[in-house]
Image: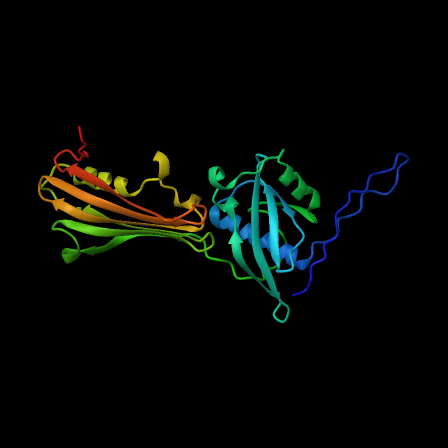
Length: 280
């Protein structure tokens, strides 16, 4: 690995009596250009809009690159990754990714503000500053493998002996290898062809709603999650022509949490009305 030496950029001011214009900034080193291109690929995969200012910290001996990204609203995001260079093949490898800007989850990941002393110190020590957006032409050939973006599917995968009569099982899977997040949700649904209770569509919608929830009453937004896993399953405890009762189990584990969590919730639906029964 070649050691990176990035010159500090200085703005040359015109003298009072006139003089040459400001010097043209030196060209970014190849590794820095690849790092910007890598960030841009993430912007494109995750639909990040607007122009960001990227501050580069001096690279560590372990090839760890720390970054500070200022978003269009003037808020800051701390990011980091390891960038290794294969000199023989002139190829770059990115690993140990920490990219909260791709989640857009400010409540969890965005702690820095303009007045923050640590943020100001990072800006002052930055060895390079660059502008970046998803649609910017960086005029740099891509020389790294692009990590896959999020993949999601929601499909029938069981029924018959695996589920009560008249029901099927569906599997929802959301995987984002770049952000290290997976959500796996198995949930029952009634077959679409059923006509023996008034509103199967309403019943199915209510079942699905019970599985696809966010924390604290928030919507279920897997695209805002990072470095974690959610698994949800259900056991059918009653299924007849009048009532459906489910015991829903969740297990989750997140790097930002102090420990894994798991719990059960219950749901009973009146198949005549499609409404959930509640205790009085």
